[in-house]
Amino acid sequence: MEAMTPAERERLTNYLSQTRSQLLETVRSLSPEQLDYKPNPDRWSIAQVVEHVNIVEGLAFSRIDAAVKSATPSAQSAWQGRDETLVELVKDRSTRVQAPERGQPTSQLPHEELFRQFDAARNRTIEFAAKTEAPLRSYCFPHPIFGEMDAYQWLLAAAAHSDRHCAQILEVMADASFPRAAATV
Image (tube, rainbow, N blue to C red; front, side):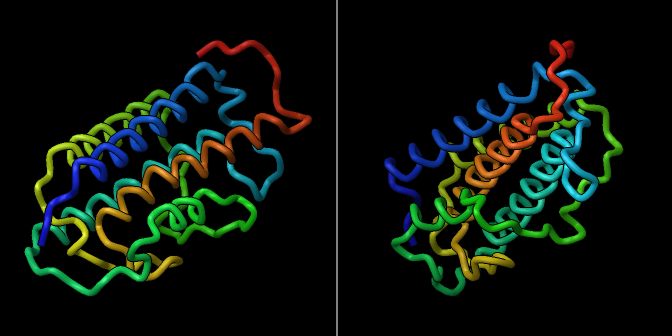
């Protein structure tokens, strides 16, 4: 059981940092009206997208943390040797995916709290990725869509999930009826 290679650690921490910055830079200057705008009733607002990303990141991190603390290595990843393919599939918006109920936004938090939670959760994830000596490739557990993934791949998927939803946010902003008023947040 080996720890991450320096190249793996660099790839992971850079991707997590990049997607944190990308998402926050995209949403922070938007007005409350823009954050709450829904292209149609069955689609999420930008604020709901950010809340969903927060929920999923928290769930994924707790599963990774529990797996690593169990100290019991598990099955091999179904994606062994195919990290970049997995990342591309997670990012791909050509197929809509319905989030499970526990991943659904509740729209209960103020916008600034959503941003603060995302930043705090992502910083925790980045710190973990930067410092852990756990053999992340040795701990696998199933993803509801992608099957067995190792803990390293789960962390890559968290970054790719942000990427996916940043693209969704840009789609909402590109909607013809999106409020174009100057940002006030």
